[in-house]
Length: 148
Image 1 (cartoon, rainbow, N blue to C red):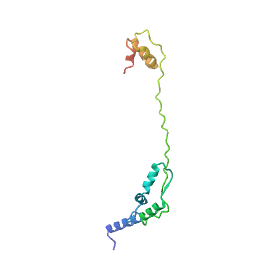
Image 2: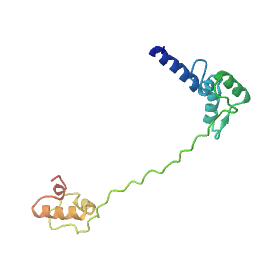
Image 3: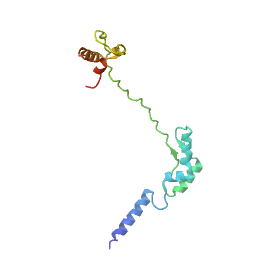
Image 4: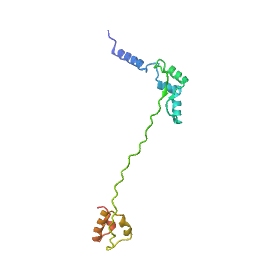
């Protein structure tokens, strides 16, 4: 006679828990290290600048082994040294291409507004050429710089 499916599943789960160390009466090394205080001591040591492995004291090791119970037998417990993260230089930001400043002479043959003489050398060649077209039509340098 075969056992009932529910009983078969329950028995399988219990056996799986025993094999994995997670069954009744078994605790993980992590959990026991927390209970004993080793993980807190290691975290404090890291915070104070300690690098490299931090090993459990013989007393902590004995307490962790007792806490784990029939779990894996450990001869030493330590926290691994943190892997240093290499600081990467930020990727260079490509500068936006700067248009060459115009070198056309100030068009004094047209009526200019106050500030046009200071504005003219800051314009690119394309802006100066556009401004000349506007000035020829009776407009201003500043109006040539407006939106199309």
